[in-house]
Length: 405
Image (tube, rainbow, N blue to C red; front, side, top):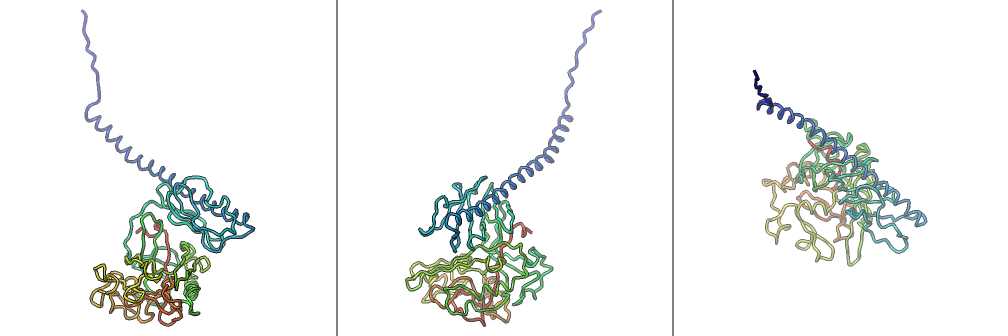
């Protein structure tokens, strides 16, 4: 007798399929981040290698320049702006230099889409600012490259605690109010972030107090720049960490009596650890615009060249009327805290000592004056030979990765 047998096709049950899907999802959750991390590290390493290559090309540029010009090299700062076309020299040098094949940096690897490279101090000091490579922001300092991805922008006046001797962030618990007294130069001190631009790899910090007092330049002529201030800054920061990022050179330029004047501060000659804030930076922080119709004086208001850090809301009187006082705090109090008698003008805390501090900028309205921040909550010109009332308030630059808390 013939029997018919039916073959049974056995498949996965719904529960078994769900179990397989869950297992695959778990594997993906574990593996994908690791793969992405490996790829990101590869991109980061390539960006850092490219940054080092660009610095090497700048060093080769100095050598080629000197060989091509009988050992000569410009005393000022050479600036290269980088884009997809490469890093192009922005200076117009005089005809005494042979500039054949010296208008750009020659390097291999990924080109930065933006950023700046400067060569100063007769070719000895090479610095980078915000090189954008592979969507990383890169810089080169103290012989090594470092790159970070885009970080959150912090508002001007954001408070941080940093120990400049150790070169690292410290805890608010390690800070005491005594660390904000005039003359304190070491330990866990209070700083404020300013001008934290998008795409930047660094934070710029200004201390909350003066570390010493001095004249801006006792010779009474601002054409030579802030000599006494810079020397005092150098002497006061000798114990600070060499890991602090070297400040970029600063050039002040203006017209006085229809004559052009300028000077350049190259911080490599002052220890490369700290610098001064400039009048232009304070104007940027407060939103002031520089006048173009005042013969080059700049920020001219009423009949003199100054403005309050706080002002009225209307455009016509924006920088002519101070609104902060002893009962209404200034939103820029962090810029003039810890100056003598400043609480009457909107600061948070006053202390006996200096009435303000010097900027790195000469006052274009007077050959014997420089811009200084005053306890009124005011940016104003003052005689540069005054050593009794004004002091040094340092600015430092640190990697954003050192202040991510």
